[in-house]
Image 1 (cartoon, rainbow, N blue to C red):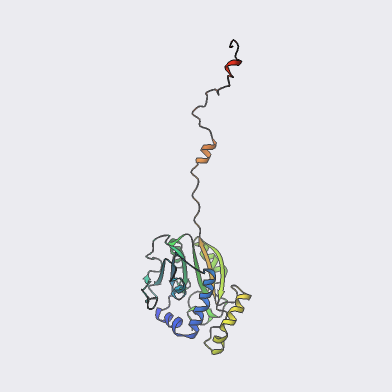
Image 2: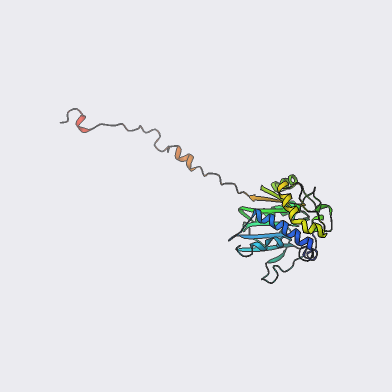
Length: 256
């Protein structure tokens, strides 16, 4: 079940804990994707807080928000780029997207395999996606006071197995939200330090969320067989004796 867009907006833009979580996750995404110059970037679920760094240089940025969640205008103060979509039927041409981010999309989906197939469809050859999901062994998945306490949390191996089922290839993984999901002043003040320490100690085991980068690999077309035909001589002249050298005219008998 998807969360309500008003609750998500309130958490990420109106609470100190939500703003801290947004920064921690966005920093990890930027470490994977520092730029997207001239590319089409899309986000599904409630990924728009993570897409702002790409607005300037990307060719196009699209916020896809599932119908059960609802949609909001984004970005504030600028032309709207967000749209309401069916979870497994996006108004995007096949192969159009270069980079795709899912936040609060996969773990709350009613049909994860179909959603992953739609992700694969819109990605172009060599396109990349990052799936951001609650870590089943982390603290954030156990607290329903944040959006990460809803839906199905994943282990890294479970997430990799699911994306492989859709034909996507896992490439890299990272983690974020090492500080506990607390709005207390102490934890908020020390959250940055805890996040840096967590990044040094673990890439997936101790964080509240897992980030998995995948790619879409398109198999090469089979060869037409031309090379094989070139290696094999034409059979048109089969049965005709091969020509033999006759030598120079001056070497033949009776010639001066």
